[in-house]
Image (cartoon, rainbow, N blue to C red; front, side, top):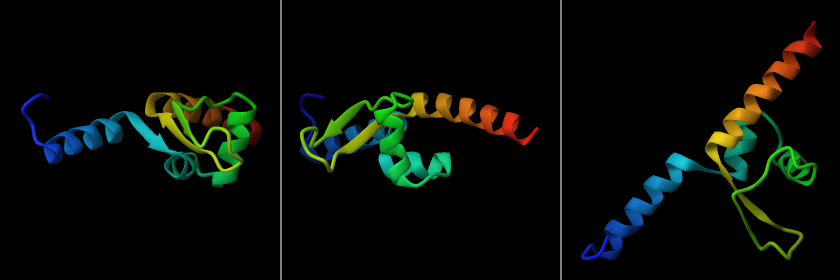
Length: 85
């Protein structure tokens, strides 16, 4: 990455983040939930954030690893299917 200008570095970082990370809002939409439920999942250790901004504040902003969210969605859908039966 040495020799690249700041704009190119930013583009590479954004591309990597988009591929591997999801915001709290993205997770809520992906799981078809309210964003407040995502905080509840974190407190219950059902989803572990990759990183939390404002960690010492009541208004935390979580970033999640995309694969973890996809795996949780599979479990959630299986659980929802069982409840329908």
